[in-house]
Image (cartoon, rainbow, N blue to C red; front, side, top):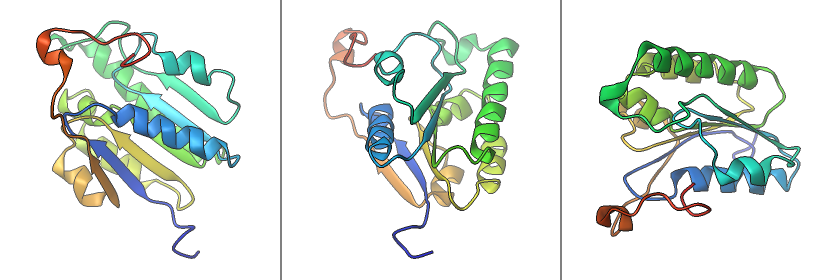
Length: 175
């Protein structure tokens, strides 16, 4: 396998906007070459525009493992943990199915930060990664252990955001 064919582990992290958007953009680009992507969304269980936009794309599969409502770290229950761990198992099955070229664990870094899954769970997942699968891990607060095993790390840095003025996620822009 030459350097251009090698598959890597990528991390998109930071407090800025665009981590999920970058991962979805990569999936859309790859679909233009007939590559198949599986996206597992960990902190998301509500409707996001990408679900509708990509529904008919035969090269992209999205599954959500999150709560239908946004949760805070202090509100975590066993049900949230069970759902996230089952999601990681689904993502593992997708990765090992030989059906996908790219696997995105969207908001997995936050799932680790919220203790929904452990860093050991995610590192074990990555240890099982076949050589022909590219993996993208998104979410703020990426743990150092993931940064150490990543081949590419992109940090989205917030310079200014209207969230700070109390403006919530806007339809079609952030959700």
